[in-house]
Amino acid sequence: MTASIKMLHAAQALMVLLLVISAVILVHSGNLATISQLQGLVQSAGVWAPLAFIGLQIIQVTLPIVPGGLSTVAAVAIFGPVWGFVYNYIGISLGSVAAFLLVRHFGKPLVAAVISPKRVAKYAHYLNDGPRFARIFTIAILLPVAPDDLLCLLAGLTTMPLKQFVWIISLCKPWTIIAYSLGMHSLLQLLGSF
Image 1: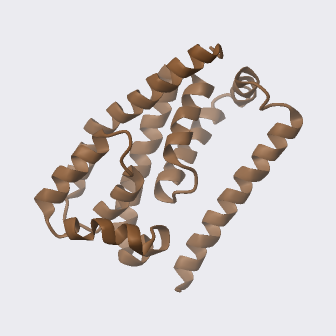
Image 2: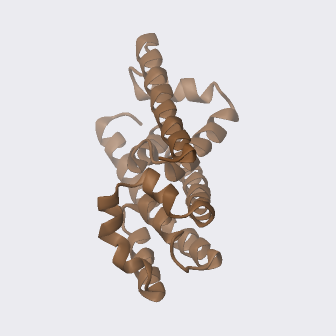
């Protein structure tokens, strides 16, 4: 295992540890007892709250630590459906482009450090067929249940031009985020949290 892969695994472990510690502190302090308490806590951070969330989304796409769907729905619970969507879209889009560019720079060793060989093998036969991969990638980005983060990393291994990748993310990703946002907003309304 190379030093850079070890550093990547260490960074992932550190992020998980920080998230767990933060959650324990918030639960212990009573700030996670209700959604309105969590919203108040986050809003007390002012402009730093959205910036921190966008940063978290960028990180979770490039180094999958937290399931993307979880952080996407959390944004709606914390910031509401409109701003939750905006912050999700910015963070996920920037993170997707960052993941693509990182793999373009570091190549297969980065993918191997983040994704299991079994999952890579599942999609490997699509990687050398540029137009076919682009079609499959576009459809997958439109689907709320597709492994988007994994596919963005794998796209970096293909011959897909950056411009095409950015267009696909920019035009297709909002629909998935809207689906998550509306679904979460409806669920929270049903539960009486909004």
